[in-house]
Length: 286
View (cartoon, rainbow, N blue to C red):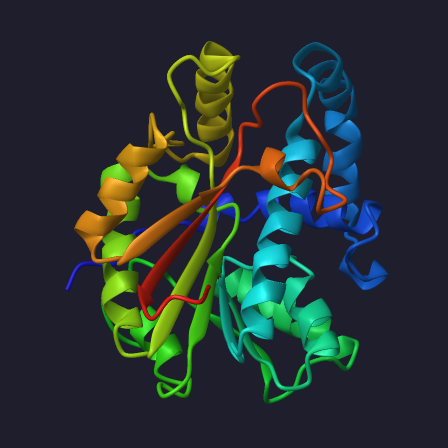
């Protein structure tokens, strides 16, 4: 069997993202890192210019996506979900926050081995790891073995619903590549009475403001992370049709603008660049 794709070059972005969470007060102080603080400071001038010119910047979109995923996860837990798997968790505070709030929750955080070990040690040092909140390694392209998606999901109760989350992951891969993972995920979720997949995505809708700017930024990010950053869809219907073809029963696309009156999320001028996609397999909660 060939080696799974190496995605280790992406993990550096977890430091910057993690610092955004701590600066905005939605993450525990112990998630703060020196590397994240350095990146946060280094990018500050560019973020300022982005907000002035484009009406939004990277931090805005990071907070929009994180808080909107949180919102949907709260709703799904209220509807009875007790099992969550977060893939490419990095320094996300979500597992820690949700396990504190919901004692019935089983939450498995996963990432590439080095990042998973770092996250595990961090949570262990602060006494917040437990049987119901744990961290383990994964490679989303591993076909079998301890790094595979199937190995992680097999540890859950397959008689109960599950939510799988990826945040800040899918746009690092061309559509054909990430679709292999999406297809595998849809198939794996068939083992549960209901499977829900929440992910952020940066579509490149035709006529969207800053269309060319997004393409340039994508190329720049791809160069820095040594990855091929992809903007996957040019319309909502294109995304819906694609997810149906991969085995998902439905796909709902959430635009942050629809939640400005409901959630304390930062606003942008014009159409936000980020969307939250919610794919389902099996029964669908209303």
